[in-house]
Length: 143
Length: 435
View 1 (cartoon, chains in turn cyan, yellow):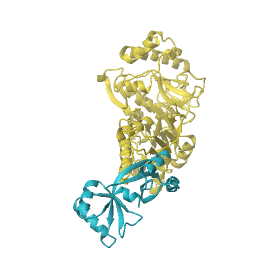
View 2 (cartoon, chains in turn green, cyan):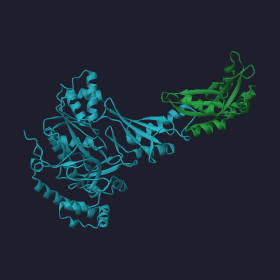
View 3 (cartoon, rainbow over the protein chains, first blue to last red):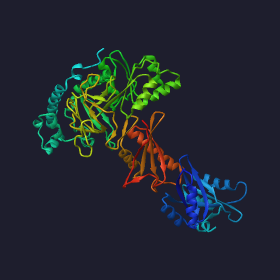
View 4 (cartoon, rainbow over the protein chains, first blue to last red):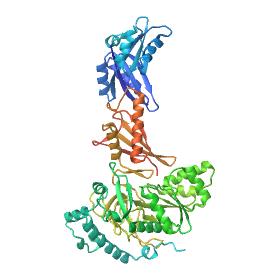
């Protein structure tokens, strides 16, 4: 039920993002979702791609520092209060969200949000109990 | 007005000075052989007996002492006097965390004060001066060394120590300071802060500035003299040998620093071959202390690069002059008066992160204060997908460096392979200070 995300360390200097997307594009890797967090000195690019191992391998080969993390992809009712209903469950369970970002494509009539959570398994159990749809990695990569 | 503190010794004809050096050298060699196992073994290994030192040239038969030897003997192994005779202990940073420890007997403290008083006089200070001593007090020898010398001179000393610049400027004005002792960069910082406060430091009573513990240049001297309106004098010292006051420029000449040869025998060697260089040539300064009781050192390799000039000086002193220091024969860098070895930063990174990351130290001088940036390559062990983890990693390393070395730094995380590697060994220091 978990999704694998890769994170890449980038210095804040021009052309780094272009370089990474070029490398992935040339390797035929499709980016499904992304989020960029940055400070004045460095940034962290987080990606959901269609081929995690290949993307990780090729970026490492090109000298980037890459990590793999497990995240949770949750289908969100595309209506006012949709995201709030998910966060309420996590809040009620005392589960901390480190960060989250939206998926670029829709799943049926609903949106997809990626959550990075400190207690992934507990979050999945809680959200499933509340009838939220958790998307499996395989499905997401191929969307 | 006489400008000698010990006129007889300071102007001793060379022949008499060398005779005194030999007598004192023979004395110290016999003492360390008898009292310090390290030296007994080293002399035996070199096949030289104390009684074989018949003239000054025989000094070259004796083995060198290095900072490593001091570290191996940590803390008191090289002391030549029993602990109950030691009245003061100072220390400077070592290469891997453990400091280099020195001990002074009562006689050593007196000698140091006298040599520092001599140095004050050579710089143009005298009894009646108000000495604003902004060197740090503590394990570092700067503060207390200058302090005791100022008292011995008969001047009024203000033990202001470092920091709190606004207060320093107020006290300097209100107390009527005439002599300033601090690092050269701090003097410029003081001048700038004074200008911001609307204080005319150039019009103050300051007449003499004695600056050391940090590399500087003739260009900086001109800038300091123009901004503070005083004679800027270069002073040299190191805790292993004594502390400040080993050598100083005379205000009349400002052409090299007189090294007090009745207490120290200087040699200049080629750091690669360890052989003496030609007259006046540049090399590494090696010093033998010939009057110290607590921790006499034989042929101590200072790693400082200079040259020695024994031609007569306008001031009348007969003691040779070392040129303004032009570098180091090791990789030590001096940041705001604090000695820093890249290996210390390396061990901090190793200890705090458990990995050996590639790093580069960038030393610069901004607004007259030295800055240290530590660039660390982010490898997979250090990396995290969370910003806060990486940020706290930087803060943690900065804190460790501050705690261990006493130096404020900025850690910058960089991508792998961005730091230059040359001949298999990474370049660890980039010193972009324009002195």
